Length: 548
Image (tube, rainbow, N blue to C red; front, side):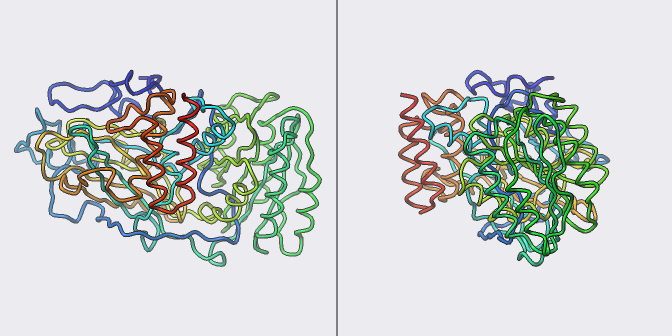
């Protein structure tokens, strides 16, 4: 079944919710919308993500939340994530009542499960901010709520080693029986620069005519110059350019005493003609394979406005080259988008197939943050093929909706199928998923169990970690709950309002009109004393003025 309905406003898509009356099956359950990768043919947005290249900067982390062991360490024996294939799965009873079938205690009906691949992109929020600053509302099709939410710092507890900590909390909204439930995952902090593996980075630079616009090639050159000075002596760099054709300007070169060669190559970049992105990707991967370093982090970094107009412009044809290099050599792709016009759909699909991420930069500060401060989060990996699954208790939950992650959904039965693609996550990252949850009147006891499964990046050994939430753990009022949960709520409501046209506010339960949301954003920004949250409040205010 297709997922053409996903991008429509919530009011027009109530069938996208999962409702548990116990009397009917839902045709749009997640397992019927399996998408192993985010193949977004229609999204035209931008990506401003947490982390991309590599430098001498290091991540930070902290927090206070707790996590349980792989199958939950609490006393609750009720519904856990999907069982191992040999265990079978129960089918649920009317109104979620228990039966004597032991399998019913292991796995709820698939209707009560939500499964998705992890994603740390934040680009959609960055592009929306640029659009608003330019005096226009972003195209609703470019708004991805999870990327808004994941744009903000969290205070989840960090694990000591590879893998994740799991935090599950939430608060009640002012819509009767509706709550926001938050699943928070965090990786360890980034190791000091000297402890990370060396990097072998192949930069593929778009030098087509459109890159001559201010804020495109000039920004890329400045950023590469800064980064070259910050890389370690044992790191290596190659440089490929493309316009109507592609050319390897600099083969893989160990920096050491050769930084001047890299600077000269970067300084010599200038705009040319058409955008043969396919040729650039092919040549970039050929160069990366020739310069492959064992024991190093091998990456292709594509810097472009992704407006392919010459040569191979079909995404699938280009993607096959990326996917093959990933399988054969473990080379991953990072996409850095620039420019007021940007082919987000193509860039994001390339990064998905290349097990990477995309980001968008529009000024020097953003570029330096990506190339310096956030780089350690992606130069090393702490988890491969990471997937999350949330099991809601049928006795407590009547209806739920995952906010965002539309194109990252995974079939419930594939949670423990390690052949199914998930997300690649590095140190210093957090991943937040918000659910709108409608509880049954008078519900008490267990509400949900959230689990994350991943493969060790080196041994490919699978691991799981889980956390649980009781109905009593929901804060009584969202707007007096933990400050970071309030920030996440503002971001999610703001994104949903922009998806519905920006005028009357979000269609999510408990949402406020933009006029009230702007006030809430200002209050939360004042309480957190966080510049990023102040920027969010400013953006909500701009959207309110533009929406009239």
